[in-house]
Image (cartoon, helix red, strand yellow):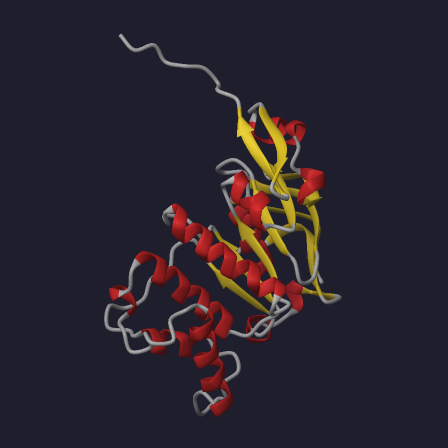
Length: 261
């Protein structure tokens, strides 16, 4: 459904993506994982066209993304950046309505079908009774679910999420990723999410892209790609990988200790 073909990209003279080729499978959750600064967020920005390519191409449903107009692309791919902001006065309902701009007629606003979709997505994320609340008055976990609701309200087949559980505690990390996983299983969405935690990756992701220094080290199903060898290659960290309750667990070895005087 979505494929990067030998893409490279740079910020000025700094190359952040180098010959990256990845095929993202339809209806699956793919985690993009790697050290800080390895190009994970840049990969999502390149797919969205926010970061111009110096080489290669990105193909969505047999069409080059670079040739798709912005409004048409917004009907195909939804993007959730790391940090999201909205005016203090904006309610959750108003925020969700913004998601449908690519579908609205030049003159006019949401249709009745749009409004029904908005009601459904708020129920899906467990915020059906919060439409009138200011977004900035919601709790941290609720706000993150609100942004996911906005992405859902865009009603695209592909969703890109850059660190969707950043700054959340463990309870809300699991709650949000369970919701994201449901998007693929119950709604057939193709989700690509930048994650940092390997154990969250092995718990929720179907596939993984492991990156280092702007390159894709390996990609594919979690069980085939998350190994002791690939983790050491990507993170310079020795770790044991073992199965537990139907998923893989990553147990890093200590890299040393600091003497306490």
